[in-house]
Image (cartoon, rainbow, N blue to C red; front, side, top):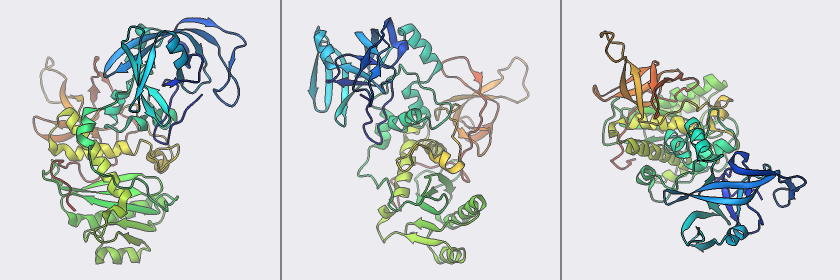
Length: 470
C-alpha cells in the first residue's frame, strides 16, 4: 500500500517501509533489479483502490544506513510493481530468510541470519520507515547516477540546511525546476551543524489564524537585533516583511532601529507598485520603532490598518517571530558548517531568506512562496552551498602565464541579476562577478546563473553570538 504519513513527511517511490501485511517484497524501480524475470497476468491487491499489476520478479540489492555505515543486503523474489507509491520490505519474507526484527523505542532493527545488524528504521506515525535505498542496477550504475545528481545531504547543504522533509516535498510535488536527486542516496538522520544551530526552547506558533488569501493584503513585520558584531556592511539589525497569503518574505538590513519606519513605507510602496494598492493590514510588535505617531498618521492617510500585539506578548506576532528564528537557525548552520566568520551573518541571513522563499511551507499547498508571489516555479538547478569555493576571473593586468582565476567564498546572488556574490578573505569584503566557475569534486566548469534573483535589502551582515534583544 502507499503511505503518506503527515503534512511534513513526504514519501517517494524510493522509500522503503517494513510491512507485516505484505507477503512479498515490492520494489517500484525497474533499474534496481540485477536479476529479472517478466511476469504475466500477475496482480496484487492492497496497493491502491484497484489491483496493481506485478510486471516482473527478481533480485535486488538494498543499501541500509546503520549509524552512518552502509550495509548491503540482497533481497530475492522481489516483485516489480511500478504502480506502488513506495517500496515494501515484507516482514514475513525477511523472517523466512532466517532474519528477524527487534522493535524498541519507536525504532526497528533488522538482523541477518548470522545475528548481524543489516538495517534500521524509525517509526513515523504508525509505520516503520527504513533508512534504505535500492542500488540501481548494481553498484557501478549507482555510482554513475551519483555523479549526475546530488545526494539528499548535498541538497540539504545547498538549501542552507532546511529540513529533509521540505526537500522531499520539493521532489514529490515537483515544486521547482532543476531539482534532481540521486535516487540511491539515503538522507542522514542527523546533521551536526543543524544540531549546533537549531537546538532551542519552545517554538513560536508556526501558523496564523484567519490567514488572508489575497497577496499583499496583510504584511507581518518584525525587527531582529541588535547583534554583538557589526557586519561588513555595518549592520546591527534586520527587518522582515512576511506576506500573509503567500508567505513570501523580504529582508532589509538596518544600521539602527530608527531606519525601520522608512523601510515600512518603502515596502508598502513596492506592494502598491506590484498590486495597484497599499496593503490593508500591517502587523507589528508594539516597539516604538515600528508603531509611532508618524507611522500611524501615514497608515491612516493611505487606508492601512495597523495591527499590534499586546504589551510584552511578541508571540502574538508568531509567524513573523518564527520566521526570524528560522532565518537565524539556517544562517547559523551555514556559518558553522563552513567555519566562516560571524561578521558574515547578514550574507547568511540574506541567502537563508532566498532559500526559504523557494521551499514549501505548511501554509501553502502544492507551491512555494516564490511561485505564489511571482506565479512561476523557481529554478534551483544552479543553487550552491553557502560558503563553498567559487573561482572568479582575475581581470588584473598580469602576464599570460599567471592563473586566470582566484578562489573565493560563495555567499549568494545579487539582486535581480545573474551576478554571484562572493567573499574575498584577503581584503575582507564582499564583491560581485558574473564570470565564475564552481568546483564540486570535479574539474571547474562555467556556470550560467539564470533566474536567481535575490530578495536582498540594503545590505547583508549580522552576528550570532549575542542573544536576541528586543
